[in-house]
Length: 244
Image (cartoon, rainbow, N blue to C red; front, side):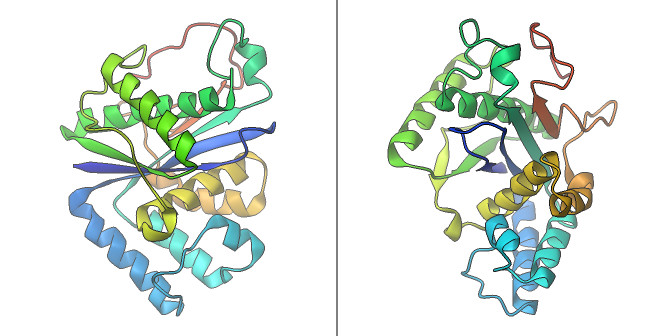
């Protein structure tokens, strides 16, 4: 069994970039990730039950040494990173909302990002001949319910390009302060989004994480697989192409 932990970065009600992403980890590899995480926190004398979040790193609430340590932990752990970055300003121009639902509303933007990630997770599960669960940082009760309904429909119908038969049940939603996996997802997606926005600290941490990102099994390509930008920088209005 694989677990895909997801968090978001950016505001759906504002312009700029919105990112959704995180980490996929096999259940048998979870103890190693947990032990590495606890060791990094313990060495920094940081309480194990206290969150380590990107916001705290940017605000200086998380010591630099601990921030470096947790990213080293992620870079050295058996996991796979996936992030989808949506351009909320270019998107509606390339894919007009009168014809496409990708950017029609904040909920549609989130659903678009989640669909891309679910497809990539399904590819990973196919490659590993395994099943998987998706765990998402809880937002608001009404929004969580809409997400569950959307993902339930997606599992039933599939995406335009594949069935999601290896992803079991629906979404599992919970607060990040009780989940190492969701805290890891926060760091991965926020550092990636910061790098995409040109923030030097984000670029530095993303370079550490790059070897852990999902890649095309034949070409080794990162962009379009582990890191999906939508619309692509050279995207024109055209049907989406299959990744594999």
